[in-house]
Amino acid sequence: MSERDSPLLSHLSLTVPISHGELAAHLGIGRPTLSAAISKLEKLGYVERRQESADRRVVMVWLTQKGAVARAATSVLDYDRVEAILSRLSKKDKSMALAGLEILAKASRDFMEQSGKKKARKKAKG
Image 1 (cartoon, rainbow, N blue to C red):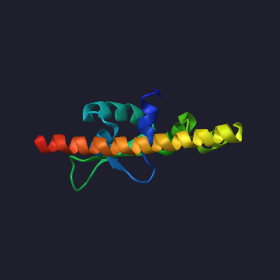
Image 2: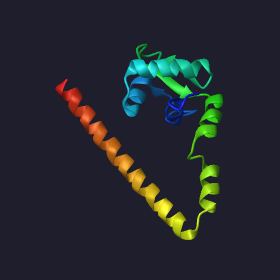
Image 3: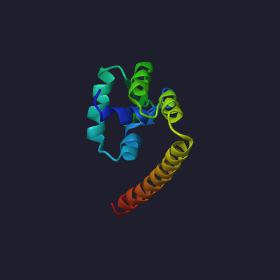
Image 4: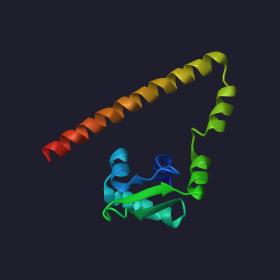
């Protein structure tokens, strides 16, 4: 699995499928690029995909158990790994690290919100 595949797996669920279109938009990549990556991950047994019966144009994708194991093995935000890292920090450094993570989380939410608005404007201009 490449470094580019790990973030893709982190956006998938074992139980809740997501459409190719939604996933491509969320990741900010084109559908052909996503389709190639999904094909590779499907061959590795990390994801499954299926066309919707109601609308055969819609392809849903979700994580397999093997994919969940691969995701956990490569995630820097694995709960046990983060807990072990934080336990090694001084109280002051732990507070600073957690504050930094809160700042990054907020910036990420703001970015995703703004990206969604920009995409909506582009579609409206279309």
